Length: 185
Image 1 (cartoon, rainbow, N blue to C red):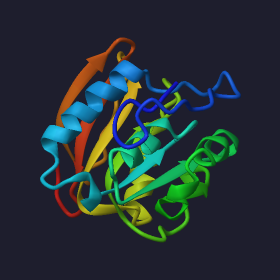
Image 2: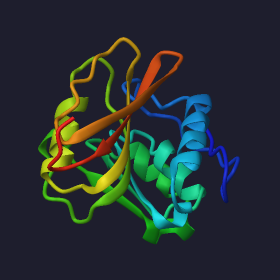
Image 3: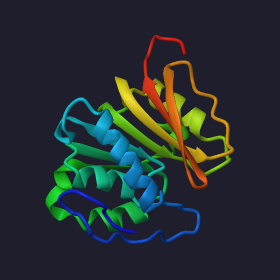
Image 4: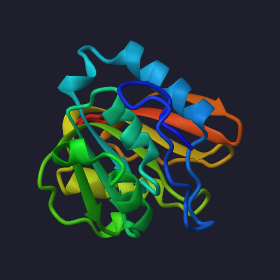
């Protein structure tokens, strides 16, 4: 596992300590960042990305390498996150680690512009996690959200999100949403 592009291109990351952690494949991560690069209206330095069910933190750290203003990493088990974020001592002020159960989040200390969420597959966690993020103020209105699920998994999108598109990468399906509080699908 490594950083694909940006300031830290090629930097190796620690692999997961647990077989319960399933990082997004490098190839899929690269494709998603290509889509993000063409979708974002401003440069990366204008965005704060929240990586939920972050695992190793690879997606958030990739955004950091590409110049994201800040990355927030949420996971119930932060051991892998701590090891990987320690590889970026010069970026300490731009990395926020939150040890939380995503389904029982506290009120957000700040809101994020971008979301990447990769819950354990086929456990029905993505929809309630999206709802919790909305209810607790973790996302800015208009936030672009990428939700990875297993390709056959169905996602009941909460009413405060607008479906944009989806892409399939091997065993994964990534659903693109916009956070739109106060609007219906």
